[in-house]
Amino acid sequence: MEDRKLILDIQDLSIQYRVEGGTVHAVENLNLALGYGENLGFVGETGAGKTTTALGIMRLVPDPPGRITSGRILFEGADLLRKTEDEMRSIRGGKIAMIFQDPMTSLNPVMTVDKQIAEMVLLHNDVTERQALDRAVEMLELVGIRSERARDYPHQFSGGMKQRVVIAIALACNPILLIADEPTTALDVTIQAQVLELMRELRRKINTSLVMITHDLGIVAEMCDKVAIMYAGRVVEYATTEALYNRPVHPYTEGLFNSIPDIDRDEEELKVIQGLMPDPTNLPSGCPFHPRCPYAVESCSREAPGMVEIEPGHLVACPVRTEHRLNSVGWKGGAGR
Image (cartoon, rainbow, N blue to C red; front, side, top):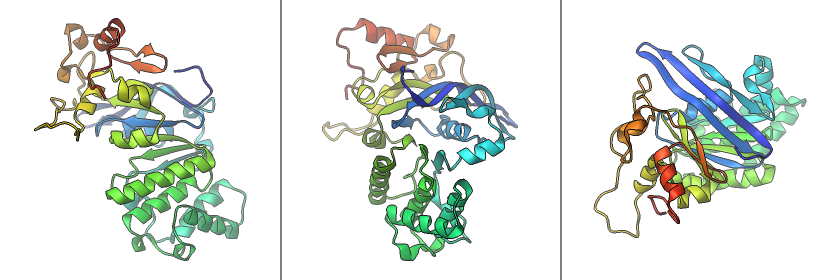
């Protein structure tokens, strides 16, 4: 998107699932870019296609029923979709690591946690088993787990501690790209804060680029430099965190901000986005958001909007609001936050 050195450049990516009821268009013509050392927040409702995009990057889309139908995923300039499975195995966990959403199901219940971390180290490094186990203990201490817990099994840890183990596994080989899929969803608020602070600190130590998948705009504000807002398999707005929070343009982005409680205002009820996410097997024609959009005009139901750059690095897929933004001097976006 911007002219800069990119670690990840997704171009026109489409991913579909063939199911009994038809074809699920999980990701449609997605374009996304991430620079070295950058943090990208990937925001949207459940079913928007965020996790499917992450699985696409990792080449882990289950086939069948899923398949990548078009596009390119350039990682350090090379297309991951052209890599062999053996080449991808060396990249996964080595150069690209993923923290999955549920730590309860991400760990092997019959292996001690040090062996699970050591397994990843042995897979990607030319080291002895003893060296791998030493690295495992080092990683556990790095995420705040005492070395004497290294020989414990997952069931002996709390949810927050399990998530720390999952993070230790993901970071054991010093990946240059980390994908975190709602890493704090199953955790209480106190543990959420601890895990986010841990990830922030570890990022500083090893300078990893981060894709943070979440539906929580508060987490994005804390953790991310850039934000991509996703709806029905498409990115509808992409900007720096500062631009998006202060000058949101797309009606869906505006709706997300309006639905956040404001402690400074005395309001009896939240402003919700009307309607529901469309059926992914039967997406509406034109802009997928137009049936729920308060600004929709007739052309919105006919033409799928492309992304337009309204200021450097700020792209929006909404011609109605984009025209308003460009023609209005000093217009600050509907959410006004």
